[in-house]
Image 1: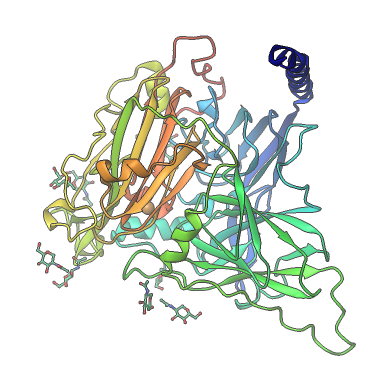
Image 2: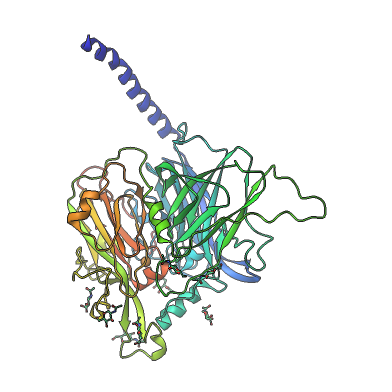
Amino acid sequence: MEALKNFGKCPIIFLAVFALLASTLLSLANAKVHEHEFVIQATPVKRLCNTHSAITVNGQLPGPTLEVNNGDTLIVKVINKARYNVTIHWHGVRQIRTGWSDGPEFVTQCPIRPGDSYTYRFTIQGQEGTLWWHAHSSWLRATVYGALIIRPREGQGYPFPKPKRETPIILAEWWDANPIDVLRQAQQTGAAPNISDAYTINGQPGDLYKCSTKETTIVPIDSGETNLLRVINAGLNQPLFFSVANHKLIVVGADASYLKPFTTSVIMLGPGQTTDVLITGDQPPSRYYMAARAYQSAQNAPFDNTTTTAILDYKSAPCPAKGTLAPKPLMPLLPAYNDTNTVTAFSRSFRSPRRVDAPAEIDENLFFTIGLGLNNCPPNFSKNQCQGPNGTRFTASMNNVSFVLPNSISILQAHHLGVPGVFTTDFPVQPPVKFDYTGNVSRSLWQPVAGTKVAKIRYGSRVQIVLQDTSIVTPENHPIHLHGYDFYIVAEGFGNFDPKKDSSKFNLVDPPMRNTVAVPVNGWAVIRFVADNPGAWIMHCHLDVHIGWGLATVLLVDNGEGLLESIEPPPEDLPLC
Ligand SMILES: *[C@@H]1O[C@H](CO)[C@@H](O)[C@H](O)[C@H]1NC(C)=O
Ligand SMILES: *[C@@H]1O[C@H](CO)[C@@H](O)[C@H](O)[C@H]1NC(C)=O
Ligand SMILES: *[C@@H]1O[C@H](CO)[C@@H](O)[C@H](O)[C@H]1NC(C)=O
Ligand SMILES: *[C@@H]1O[C@H](CO)[C@@H](O)[C@H](O)[C@H]1NC(C)=O
Ligand SMILES: *[C@@H]1O[C@H](CO)[C@@H](O)[C@H](O)[C@H]1NC(C)=O
Ligand SMILES: *[C@@H]1O[C@H](CO)[C@@H](O)[C@H](O)[C@H]1NC(C)=O
Ligand SMILES: *[C@@H]1O[C@H](CO)[C@@H](O)[C@H](O)[C@H]1NC(C)=O
Ligand SMILES: *[C@@H]1O[C@H](CO)[C@@H](O)[C@H](O)[C@H]1NC(C)=O
Ligand SMILES: [Cu+2]
């Protein structure tokens, strides 16, 4: 009887497998190639009562939204008509075997110089949700950024009811100055760069800033319908809270990986992170503010304490009577700037939708401290080059190495061609000195060493990295971004990571998958991934102020031995230095 039952099931399983195969083949056949041209150019942009010449893509701010399906190929020709070097990074795209299209300057390519062009070619493989693209050169990404929307393969649906609308919500920072000058000034003085003058939603600061009301971003919704908000923090330096007055947010994805849906009234995104939320028009038809402002975990550091708004506008909202003004939209309650408890509760709600194959065993066990530092004023520097705290210059490091980019060839090119003297492979994968990372750290430990040190990772190895914040200068929540990979966040916590105590709390069942982890202030996060993508992959803090100070390293993953385990040859138009 039992055998008969099993036998009876077999043809069904067989059919199901066949159907799956057929639909995969069908959708592969449907995969599209999208060709775009990005012209990098100076464009007049009016914000906060002033007109600036901003570097944009195709004259747009934010730049063009790219919409593709999983499995599609993108070919983007970037033409640099600006006066700065530029590169474009496709944030979160795994770039499997196509590291030459990843974009960080001097890591995977030399910059595209003024007057030159370069064509990025890559295929989206197994990623669905919201990613984005941005300049990865100096501080150009302040204005050179846009959304990259990846829908399921044709014929496949979302793992949630199809929303009636979808709206990218791109949060960013705006300086009432040229951001390149802001960076240059900080490099000269050694002090922290000026904070931004405004946050923006889809390029607009909104009603709470001067001269900004007319252009406030409007997000439409209708009673009863659902809108999928694809929220991106494109800000340069500031983690942000985001909330919508009177509306619940159902979180369904982050960094182009789906999540087990959960409901919240506020989300937090570190720069680089994306979060997909469903919002339903279940409130009285009216106008409601959506707003974002700072989550600031660093102590005694100035920050932009302004609030950006857009308006969620019900199409069926009654029109104001003739001669009267529309009522002021309701404002959401945002957490206090230092509300770390809300951030912790939010990030602990993240789960993959189902059981995942997070590596249970690991081959490489790495431990990286991340944090700031202060360099004493070098003897040949003048006083005004050392305007950091008490006559120092700010710096930052991973495992006490303050990362320095090469300038004559990229790391990937040097590796590919075997050019010596560009980098060394002695990045320490354990802290050179162990200390109480979140305590009162002795001043003798505050000065890191500068260097272009990379960590070699064997192809195919199962990697764990513990990211440990330090309280040197100040503890801070650092959004750590890894190129070339998505990783599982198997645990997060406060204080010093304790392998004995904390390993037992790892979630290897349904941990969330991301490309950027907001490492808790005064705490740690543990990530795991399989090193199955050869290339030179920068891992860095996504606060641009910290990258500039050296909070980065490069994971150099060699080619494997099998078919399709090596990086493709470099494109012919790859920019050289
Ligand atoms: C930075 O801020 C200071 C003080 O507000 C100002 O004097 C300076 O011009 C600003 N720097 C840039 C590059 O905008
Ligand atoms: C930030 O601004 C709010 C008003 O919007 C004010 O109440 C608060 O004190 C400010 N916080 C800081 C740290 O400046
Ligand atoms: C947040 O900052 C306020 C003052 O701006 C302070 O009173 C409060 O204790 C701080 N909260 C936390 C959790 O640090
Ligand atoms: C100080 O000297 C170092 C070499 O010892 C040199 O690289 C650097 O450019 C000098 N800096 C200044 C500001 O003179
Ligand atoms: C700067 O010096 C003052 C006075 O000596 C001290 O209180 C403060 O902690 C110092 N700050 C830093 C960041 O070293
Ligand atoms: C931190 O340690 C230094 C000595 O290393 C001491 O002078 C200072 O008072 C300590 N600060 C705190 C807040 O405990
Ligand atoms: C970093 O290296 C420098 C130079 O060797 C040393 O003085 C400092 O104590 C080190 N700090 C840490 C945290 O390892
Ligand atoms: C632009 O890139 C070239 C290398 O291709 C480099 O030599 C030059 O210094 C860069 N210019 C700036 C302003 O960074
Ligand atoms: Cu950082």
